[in-house]
Amino acid sequence: MQSVLARWEIIQHKLTPYLFLLPALLILGLTVFWPALQAFYLSFTRYEYDLTQPPQWIGWENFQRLWTDAVFWQTLGNTLLYLVCVVPVLAIAPLALAILVNQKLRGMHWFRAAYYTPVVISMVVAGIAWRWIYDGNGLLNQIIRQIGLSEKGIPWLTSPQWALFSVMAVTVWKGLGYYMVIYLAGLQAIPADLYEAAAIEGSDGIRKHWDITVPLMRPYIVLVAVISAISATKVFEEVYIMTQGGPRNSSKTIVYYLYEQAFRNLEMSYACTIGLVLFLGILGLSILNLKLTNQRV
Image 1: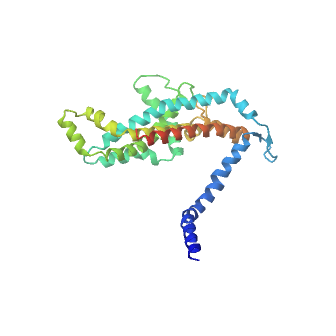
Image 2: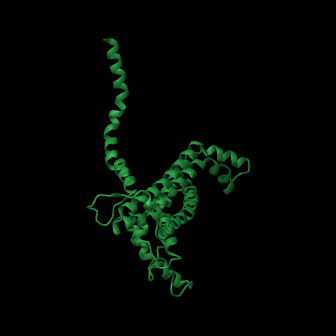
Image 3: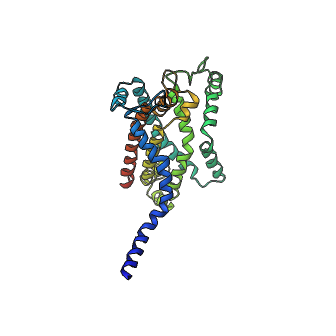
């Protein structure tokens, strides 16, 4: 009898954590895992236009279509360009900004709040505001005309050459304060004694940050680079509000193309195929994040 009670106590002890996890697992299963499995299944079917009809199994046809879809490859190129241009800026500029606001000067907390303000602004509000700034008669073109750089101004959102980079600028502006806070937490964990010792050795000014700050901040730099890369692959709101993917698909990203196929063209199965490719890309970046952080670069 005592052995049975002892075994039951052991079983209860092992089951208790899972019982606490059960409500969250049920919610995640219904809202995340089950829809993900359905999307995976739909990527191998034809389910479009008349969504009242059941999906038809077609195998790899959606993937073959994706391989020959010129617009998909253009959106993939735009997304990769987003990664190449935005990630380095968001990995370096917020670190410099964090070093600046980490100085022990009077009123510095006001500067920290000012730099963080764009983070708490809704992307909808920010996108509309920047669309006005980028307008032909907007603030930016008014300044350009005043200083004589161009009489007509620059077509920031209506030119294929400028549209994507104009949207990138909003992403950078919105993310600077967020990543600055991450770097600021790392900077405040560095002992002041290290900088004092470096000053005695002749390492002062900008050089002390190269000798001490950058090596000690490498885990944070890797973290910010991976997080910003994942965010760049999922950019949507800026494109939707400011350019709608135009002109001529020049600012269309993978997520916006997925939205367009699913909710405008009602090609759900093809949208699920695009989503599966996007999922694999983000999964690769997440695995890279785990490997790099485990190595404590």
